[in-house]
Amino acid sequence: MNEYFQELVDLFLKYKLSANQFIFMYLKLMKKDEQLYRYLETARPLSRNEIHDLEERGFITNINTGANDYWADGYIITDRFKKIMEPDRSLAEEFWNTYPGFGLINDQRAPLKGVSKKEFLQRYAMYVRNNEVLHERIMRALRFQKGKEEITIRIDRWFEAQTWESVEQELEQIRKKVYGQDEI
Image 1 (cartoon, rainbow, N blue to C red):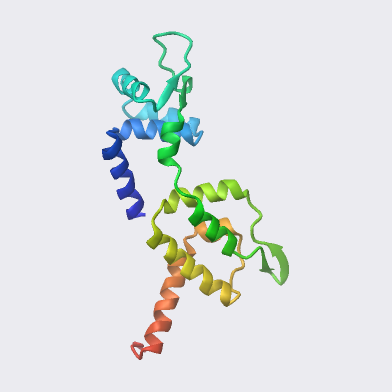
Image 2 (cartoon, one colour; image 1 turned 60 degrees about the vertical axis):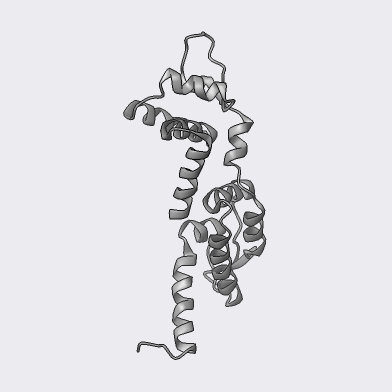
């Protein structure tokens, strides 16, 4: 998660965005209108200068009917911002393709990918971004569990629970035993 935060800060700096501008565009892009309005009501709303800046740089388009209207739902996020936020999906595809399609849940064969592939790939790609180190950690844990036929939950639940972290601990214990560093 720390790497993701650092990448966001890098985006702010690279594109000269305020946190306020970024949060506004991100919530619009993710269609989180309820959160957007809650944010704008409780935090400092975007100034007209911040909005004009986003318009001038091609990040948003104003579709409000009046020239002096600044309603949040009267803006559309442009492809320029979408491309900045759209990470490479090849890492997400690799995870999806490696995750087993079916498994045993309560001794019954059940689908493990019973979720929207498009939405899952988006969530995975947004979380991992293009951080190949994090992706490889996740994949190593997934391959280990898959090889042991231990995967018994849906793909989204495995990912949201950050299961790879507990698998990494298990792998570390195995390494200690193999190399004689067991602390028993």
